[in-house]
Structures are given as structure tokens and as C-alpha cells.
Image (cartoon, rainbow, N blue to C red; front, side):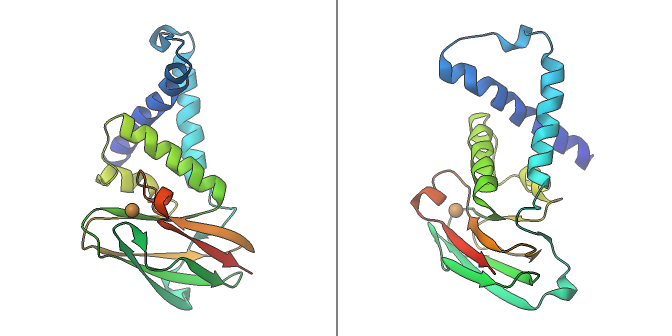
Amino acid sequence: MKHAIRKSFLMAVALGLLAGPAVAAGEGHDHGSMPGMADDMTGMMAEMDRQMADTSAFGHKGDAAKATRTVEIEAADIRFGTTGLSFNVGETVRFVVVNNGEQPHEFTIGDTAYQETARKMMRHMIEMGMDPAAPEHAAMHAPAGNTLTLDAGETKELVWTFTRAGTFEFSCNLIGHSEVGMKGRIVVG
Ligand SMILES: [Cu+2]
């Protein structure tokens, strides 16, 4: 059941992604009658699944028993209480995110490319009339384990192992939030 919900959610997001460029270019193509659309859709869904699941550039879901550090991060309207973090390569960190705001927020760990993709998908999701605070959205991100979605007043945790040196980013990818600064830098070295 959960799997079915996730697939239908991805399908809707994929439809939004496919519809996007034609609308933007003002071409007015009827994508519904394009030959090979089912194949395109399957490919698109597979590609999105792959992109959301592939965190290899910045680490992987961690084992809580191996966490050597706990970092509490406050989410508020509209900012994080922390804007810079640094960790060692190989370190497993337990992030405790507290939403003290009056609106939902998100906490996503990624590199710049991942966050850009996540924001793009978020925009399409909103265009499709979907609610980023809905359980379906959280379920989509659950396998990778790098995203928390928090309602007002909620506290949630994720455990992350940083496997590579570099400069990464944590971000709230709800529309307009990272744009006004609701993001921060993670330096791993
Ligand atoms: Cu936010």
C-alpha cells in the first residue's frame, strides 16, 4: 500500500516535470498524444527515484548506535538557528531538528546539485497541487534518510554518516525558504 502511494505520487510529479518545459516554452504541445510517452514516464520515474535515492556524493543514512555527536538544530520562521557545521570524514551525526516556527519546515542534507534538484521537484509538486507536508512526501524521501519534514512544534531526528570531504548544504526546500536564507553550510574534512 505504501509503495503504491509512493508510485502514484512520483507519477504525478513526473507529469509535472514533463509538462513543465512545454508550458515554459509556450509550444502548447499535447504531450498526452505523444508516442512513447509511457516509456518517457517510466524513464522519468526511474530517474527521479535514482536521483532522490543517490546520496553517495555526501554520505548515507547512519546507524544511531554509531553516532558520535548529536547536533540540535532549531527551525524557525524563516531560518535555521545554525548556519554552519563542520564534521570529520567518516563521522556519524545524530541531528535533532526542532521546529519552533508556526509553519512547516524541512531539513535536507545534500550537496548543491542535490538541493537544486530537490527544489525543482518541490516547485513541480506545488504546481501539481500537492502538499509537501503530506506523509506521501516524507515517504518518498524515507529510503535515502536525508530529509525530515516537520509540522509546527514537531521534533524529529535523522542520523547521517558523512563519507566524503567537501562543502555541503543543509536546507529547507519548502518554496521560498532557502531563498531567504533557510539553509546552512556543512564542511566535512
Ligand atoms: Cu522552512
